[in-house]
Length: 124
Image 1 (spheres, rainbow, N blue to C red):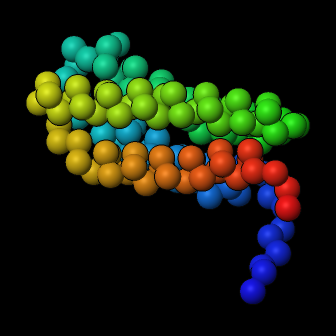
Image 2: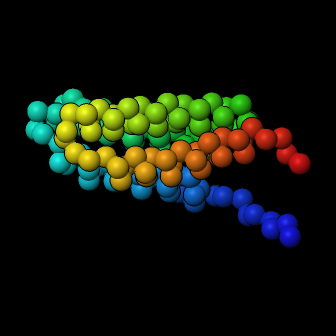
């Protein structure tokens, strides 16, 4: 059965954007438990990188042309991996357990890569 999909009108309608936005909200809540000494260090870097992911998806949404769209999605994957490292560092510094956020990051990574592939796939 071939199901016709209606065009998405807003970036907020994208499933990938919603999943990444949920991840960012979790990151912000999670960062609250960091030591005060990290206010301008690891906590700020983690938030900056997390916010960059959905921001690049939003920016990609109104771009025209597959190459331009793919470039912004590719840019979004950089901060995703950056966050992966920050979670490893956070755990190694014993600031907090990161299992839940790592799982959330994995749940974000899969649809982001699928979205990237969908953009690059030639129209049938």
